Length: 264
Image 1 (spheres, helix red, strand yellow):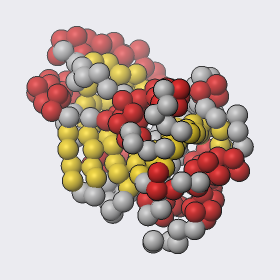
Image 2 (image 1 turned 90 degrees about the vertical axis):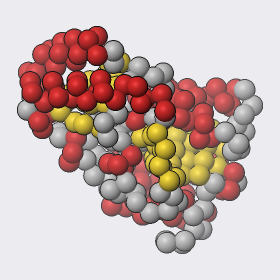
Image 3 (image 1 turned 135 degrees about the vertical axis):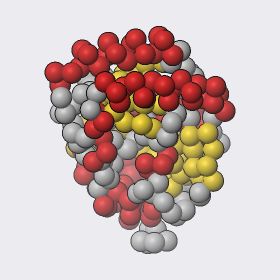
Image 4 (image 1 turned 30 degrees about the vertical axis):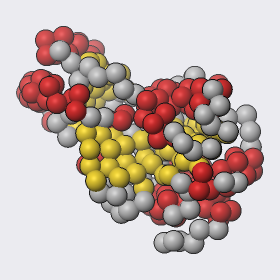
C-alpha cells in the first residue's frame, strides 16, 4: 500500500502524460437501493472537469450506459465509457462496438420477458445493449431472478454478467473493464484507476500488467472502500479511500497540486 501523498505525487508528476480512469457506482456515486436513483457527489463532477483540463485523459469507465452517464458528465473533456467498454463518448462523439449489433433483437426479447415477470422498478434497460435484473429492493426475489436470467440467457444466446445484487444479460462479447483500461492507458506514462467492486478488478489487473510489461512507467490502483466491498479489493489496490467522499477528496487534492483552476 502507498499513502495519499505518494499517490498525488505520482499522478501530478507528469500531468499531460497521465490518464485517470474512474468507476461510477460506489466510486463517484454512493450505493443506492434503486439503480435509477444513483447520482454522483456534486463535487465529483466539478473535480473531474478540473482534472480533464490538466491531465492527458480523464474517463469514467462504468457498466452503466453512456446515455445515463451523460446526464451528469455532459460537457467536453471527461470521456465516458459505458457497458464495460462496449460504448464510448468523447466530446459528444458516440460509438458502439459493432459486435453487439447481432444481439440487439435478443436483448429486446429478454427485456420484454423480464418486464412481464418482475416489477418494472427491478428491471433496468441499458440503451438496448443489455438488461439488468436488480433484487436489492426485494432480496427475496434473488433466486427467482437468477433462475429466470439463466433461462433467458440460454434461450436467447446472451451472456450472464453477475453484479452487486443484480444480474445482467448482455451480448456474449468478451469485454470487461480490463479491456477498456488497456485501450485507454495506451500511450501514456502514468495511469490510475479508481473502483470499488468485483467488476473493477480486471481494470486493476490490467494496470499491473501494463507496468510489468513496461507499457506504463507507473500505475496507481485506488480502491474505494464500502461495507459491500469484495474481500479481494484490498489486495488488488495500492491505496484504499473511504467511499466516494474519500475519492473526491483525493482527486480535489490532486487538482490543487497540479494547479488547474476551477473551470480551466
